[in-house]
Length: 338
Image (cartoon, rainbow, N blue to C red):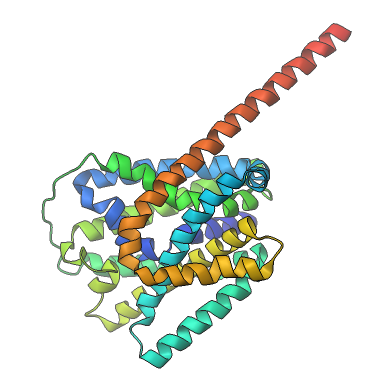
């Protein structure tokens, strides 16, 4: 079970980034669509389960495809750059609470640590997420419980069918950036472990998306904040620090996985070029601002993410057909020989 939970927290850490842990992403893709948002979350988590299971099972095949098909790599790199830039922007927003000198120091330390982990690779990422994500889960739950009791406003909001469009976009955006990590992790799992990892990841996402959506829908005053959950904790220093820690951990774990993905996809044999593309380029792009990236660039990246996922699913289907056909031919030859 250790390998199962190591992988669960690794994958969970790739999704619980700044947008998720701050509430902004959940607001954009779910909460603003009214009561139907709960249904959209159920659909999203079912899609997450299916995709986790599929890509964990086909890990070796996906890695081979990514190495051969440059256009797919380019699209995934663009999506990952967008997401990585938003992680950096989210962290910069958190660092803004400090003075100028401390802000510069924290940004410098962030870059150094990110470069170090990106160079160390998958094993280092697994160790970091195994330590940070269980802590993040419990703190996040405590923060949501606290906020849910803080003057809730049960205002009616219009339901919208647009969530049926945004729901798969959300899944595609988050999963497409995790494709490399999921596929690489899947190569070390057996069939039972693959099922358990997929199930536990989907359950964790369901619990937190559902609870976070409830909090956001009952606290409409937070909808215009860059980081809604942090805004809702502003009057309580203790929970403000806890929420700050959750967003910080979420940003860091997702950031590390994205940087590793970009480096491994674009310049796997050149550390210098890989680090420049995976770390320093998105750090510069993050100057666009956290809210602007989430609200304006995420939907575009989501559409591209859907295209990539559909391509892989089609490839899986075609490969299975070929394998099935080869098996049938082999059986036919054996019968003919006898």
